[in-house]
Amino acid sequence: MQIYRSLLAGTLIAAAACAAFAQEFPSRPVRIVVPSTPGGGLDVLARAVTPALTEKWKQQIVVDNRAGAGGIIGTEIVAKSAPDGHTLLLVTVGFVTNPFIYRRLPYSTPQDFTPITILGTTPNVLVAHPSLPVQRVKDLIALARDKPGQLAYASSGVGTGGHLSMELFRRMAHIEFIHVPYKGAGAATAAVVAGETQLLITAIGAAIPQIRTNRLRALAVTGTSRATVLPDVPTVAESGLPGYAAVGWYAMFGPGRMPKQLVNKIYSDVLGAIRRPNVATQIHTLGFDYGALPPDEFGRFVSKEMETWGPVIKEAGIHAE
Image (tube, rainbow, N blue to C red; front, side, top):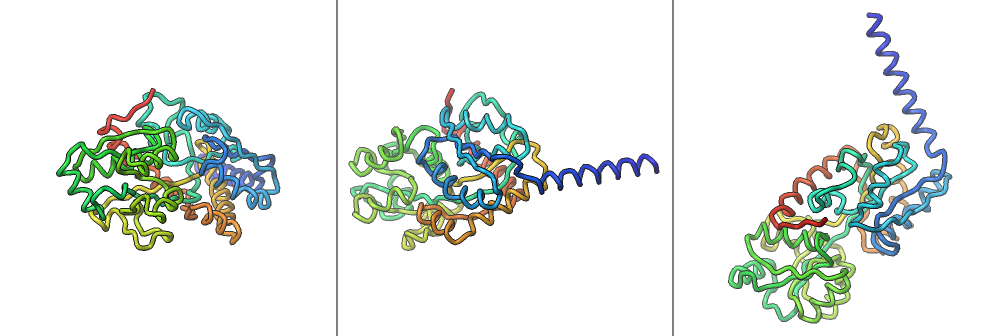
């Protein structure tokens, strides 16, 4: 009985300490590590949210751009930081695909990180050069089967979201494409507009000008629902490939082993920030759909994403040193 009371007392003391720690956060400036260059989607989203968090936390927030090695450099910094919430990580889907693309990582995914929440998603669109005789996903699949290995798609690089999304499409449809990687989304889009390649999956915001001037044809959006800015364009799933979904997402993690009370506090404060009308409007203007998953639900989402992309990467033979 005495042992039981001692264990119970110890548990209560630990819980009280964690709760007090969460209430005191932050006690110094907070660093949000963005493992990409300034001006990209991650950076822009981070800077849209930080003013509201600065006001809430009454501490300086530093957006620290640490680009390089496919996001690994910045991600490693957070993995090796103290789990006190003062160093956070903002990443994209590359966080869950890098473990399958790179043979060695200086951290373990997801064990060395604590999932906090998704801040926003980016709807993507499958586009084709107007000369390609297809109007729908069903037409594209039929054409690819008639001309196996003759249709080429562009991407912004090996292992990028557009590359993997097209590989998932190819895998589910049981067809073959030629992959032509370019150095960046702008170059990939220009290649399709010029007719160098026929297909591309890219962010809607980047493709809209070409779609509206008929230099690209929108076949389908890649999410689970239609995009507000392209209401007449169906999803891939509803227009010929049931079950397909590939959405770009932007999410926040902390180092591993963060106290649950602290994680919940940060999640709650981030949710409050992105729900502010001025912040929500800014996020939409930037081409994002905002939304936050609770930490536990987000953790399950991360596991499901790894289960989705691992087989795609392995089958396609995508790897980097």
